[in-house]
Length: 322
Image (tube, rainbow, N blue to C red; front, side, top):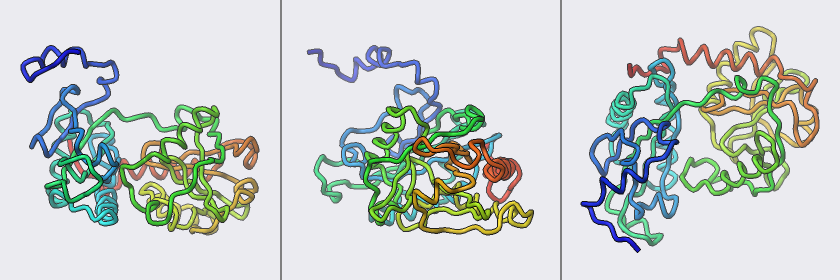
């Protein structure tokens, strides 16, 4: 077996380069104390508790047209998640915002995805959080994907997940232990559908692997699951605010949270999936059953347009980078 030293690193690094590295633009690491733009240097120590225990929290958001959208909303949720794990932030939110902006700028791409991780930090391999001297911050900037409906204008297909729903406490924390989410996505890929969605022990809708799910009822109410067993998605919450415009226009009659059953989904006029990376998606099939008329509906299309307009024009939610 070969043994490597620090002097061997340049030659070793050349063998580590992969085609997918072209999607990685910049990484800030508080361990480094700065930014790297070479993907081979975008590494974390194995003894960071985030790596071997999932002991950390994160957020994912995007920059569009050189501006980060809804940064404060995501950082507020990061604070809430960190509090749920009794995890201290390694710096103030003002400092974190500055680091995020500078990291995006270093990546050089006005259109990108940004992921912010706060970890318990390195220090050992047990489950004891007190062996970690200090929390760490990592900011990763990657390529921005294409919104789902642009790739699939015919709409999405959904299937019920067999993965047990998260408990109320864990569902509300965006932590780095994403094993259930990974298995839900695996289900979808293996089944040849676009998303799987969960139901709790009472038969009420929860969420997808990384998405919120809602319905538009036949009497034109926009409903999402109650927040006790789901992550309060920033896109979902923003969409509910934007949807008030649709109530005023007569396209919707009400907006709210409710216990949603499988039968409610099958009888809905529209089924929708939403998240930071996908925007608003119209689902036309659930467990091989047609939803509505089997075509993307007007409410989801209107919500998606309102969101895209919000990303371009709402100065209160835009943080300038370029």
